[in-house]
Image (cartoon, each protein chain N blue to C red):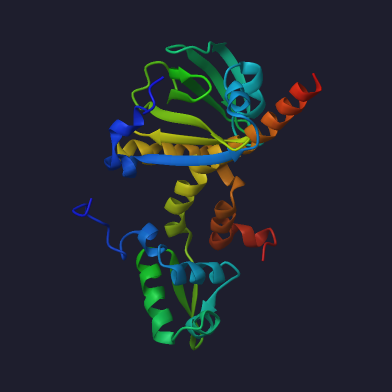
Length: 116
Length: 168
C-alpha cells in the first residue's frame, strides 16, 4: 500500500478537502463570498495561512475568486463540487435513503409481529 | 455457511473501486433479512423516499433474479436486474446489480447482517470490476438522485440558480 501513488493535494478535490481547515473554509463560503481577511479571522488563523488554503482550493476548482473594487472575494465553485457531490451524493445517498426506509419498514414489521 | 465471505478475496486493493455503507437497525437479523426475501417487503423500502418499483419477475434463491423497473420521483424509469448469487439466512446476501441479464457493467454487493445486541448491523460492501465502473455507477446514481441532496442544492446555489429561488 505504501507504494500506491497518491494524487497530489493540488490536483484532487478529495485530497484537498481532507484538510479540516479547508473544509471549514468551504463551510464558511456556503453563506456567500468573503475576503481572505474575514476567513482568516473566523478560523483564527493567519492571513497567509488562509491564502495558502484558498490557493489549494482554487487549484482543484472548489473555490473561485473575483475582484470587487479593492477587494478580492472568494466563493464556492460548482465545477469542483460536482465530483464530490456525485461521490457522496450518488450511490451512497441512494443506499442511505433506502436503508432509512428499510429501518422504518422493519420497525413496522416488528410491531405487526408483536401484535400477532 | 462459510464464516469468511467472498469479499475477503478482493483484498485491500479493492479500496478504490468499492463503496461500503453500514447501518444499525433496531430489530433482530432474522427480521431485517426477511425484508429482502419477498417483493411485498422490498417494494416497501427499495430506493430512497419518493422511489417506487414495478416487478416483472421475482424469485429469492441463489442464481435467481429480481427483474424490475425503478421509478424515480421525477418520473424517470430505470431498468434493474438483480441476481442473487449467495443467500445464507439470516447472515448474508450477495447480489449482482445490472440493468439486464447480460449487462457487462454489473457490479456485486456483499450484504451482511450481524447481531449487535438486540439490533442488527447491516453492512453493504459494493465492489466494482474497475475504478472506472465504480465512477460510472456513482455518476448514474448521482443522476438518479437528481437535485435531492444538500450538496446539489449547494451546487445550484453557487451556480446562481438557487439564488433566484431566494436561498440565502
